[in-house]
Length: 305
Image (cartoon, rainbow, N blue to C red; front, side, top):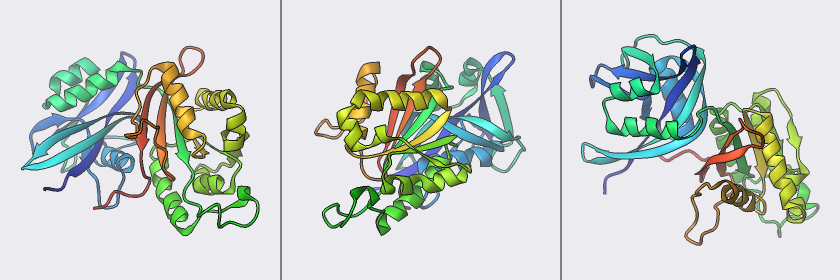
């Protein structure tokens, strides 16, 4: 069986006096118009690859937003998958290069007409289904911390294991691709350690939130939901690190409330592996934030080459 080639890309959008525009690029090697995208480097995750490819093809440093879809097709007999996100530029400018010799900012309808491939046009349609300027909450389950039974002392102080520290290191660039403005954590050492470096990247502190701990959530699940919605309402992007006794119920409650279909295990449960991330996208335009999309990243560890 041929190996699946993995790639990532984005609908890069900006506001203009005439409304929203997206970037489409011309690749001289293929003589086509496409959305910015490219293959994952060895050991790279899809969010990191999407940001890197945007910079290489468009010249813009960008921040990722909502996950859109995965497109699958065949290239020279091999299967290829492309994970697409929305993204917004924060700096930079386009300069023609070997991969891309022209970039055009166009309204969505004009961009769709120019794009060569049906798959890219479908991605644009997916982007139009929901607001592109959603708020993002990156809900992280803490990394591995060894066995609770083997730990002597206060369980709140149980630290990450060696494997957990590797997971936390892998999470750092993945979460950076979304450029979080704030980092929150349940008041457990293993939770704080999982996202401490992410907070350091933005010269901030890890803000402790007891409502994200298992003990408090069991007593007050509604309080946990309200806390997460408050985070979504307060930041364009934020990280929240919690525990396995919180995340499945919290995500499921929001999804059922707002009619969002989730990726589930065969058992029907909401997945939440240690070191994993739920990319939760909220529409915050009208009162209380409303969940409009939820994408599960099962591991922050790099994809094998």
